[in-house]
Length: 380
Image 1 (cartoon, helix red, strand yellow):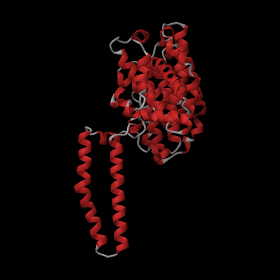
Image 2 (image 1 turned 90 degrees about the vertical axis):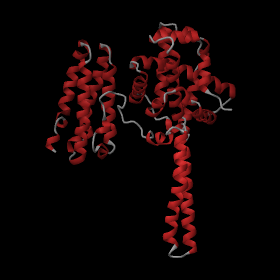
Image 3 (image 1 turned 120 degrees about the vertical axis):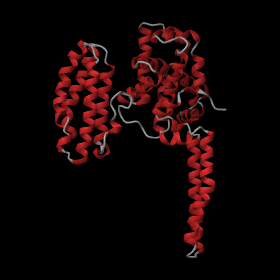
Image 4 (image 1 turned 120 degrees about the horizontal axis):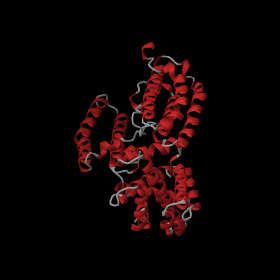
C-alpha cells in the first residue's frame, strides 16, 4: 500500500495550528482546512511534476535532506506571528521557487489557485509559503525514516497520483496541468488506441505477406467495421463510467500560456502567435511578468522594485528584433502588445495614487517603445 503524503501532511497540522494559519490569513475557521489542503495539494502536484525527471527528483531530494524536519514539532511557535513566522514564510518562498521555477511560474500558479478559491493572490501566496515547509518537512522525515535515495523519492512522489485528486478541485488540477499525471481514463484510452493500432498493423502485415489484390481493399474496410463495433462502444462506455473524464483528460493536456492567471491577459486569442517562434514565448513571459507584478504590487516599495523591472525591459526591448518583422509575425506582435497594453492600463488605474506616481513615468517610457505596435493593425 502506497504512502499518502497528503495524509501525513494533514496529520502534522493540529487543529490549533490550523487555527493559527486561519488567523494569519484572515480566513473563515471552517474553510481554512480545505483551503490548506488545496494549497498543499498544489505544491505536491508541482513536486510530482518536477520529480518526473531524474534531475528534478535529485533537486527535490537535496532540498528535502536540508529541510529541518523538527519544524513539524514546533509549528505552533513558528506560526505564532512575528519574526519567526516571517522567517518561516521566507523559507516557504524558497521552496516554492525551487519547485515551480520562481518568477512568472510561481505567480501564475498563485493566480490560478486564487481564482479557483475566490481568494486574494496575497492570501494564497502566504498560504502556499506556510504549506511548503510543512510538506518538505514531512518528505524529509520520511526520507530519513525509510532511508530513501533520490530514485526512491521519485517513486514515492510518482505514487501520489492515486491520492492527489481527492484534495483539489478538478478544474484546478486541469488549470495547473496536473490532470495528465493522474492517469485514469486518459491512460485507458491511450492503451485502447495503442491496442487498436497494433491490431491494424498486425492485420495489415498479415494481408501483405499473404498476398491477394482483393484483400488489400477488404481488410481496411473490415478493420474499420471492427473498430466501429468494438472500439467506439468501449470508449463510450469508459466515458460514461468516468463522467466524461476521458474527454476531459484529452482536453486539458495543453500547458497554459504565460499570464493565464491574470485577468485580461488573453494571449490565447491572439492570431499567428506561433509564427514568432522562440521570440513569442519570450515576449509573452516578459509581458506576463510585468503584468503579474503590477497586479500584485500594493505599496511604494514594491512599486519601486517593479519600476526597475519595467525600465530594464524597456531598455532591452530592441533585442527582440520586432522592428524587422512583417506579415503574420508582425500581426502577432501587434496582437500581443495590444493585449498587454490594455491590461497594464486597466491594472494601473486601480492602484493607489502613490503607486501610480512611481510607476506611471516608467510605464509611459515603455509605451513609447511599444508605440509602433499599438493600434497599427490597419497598417499591415
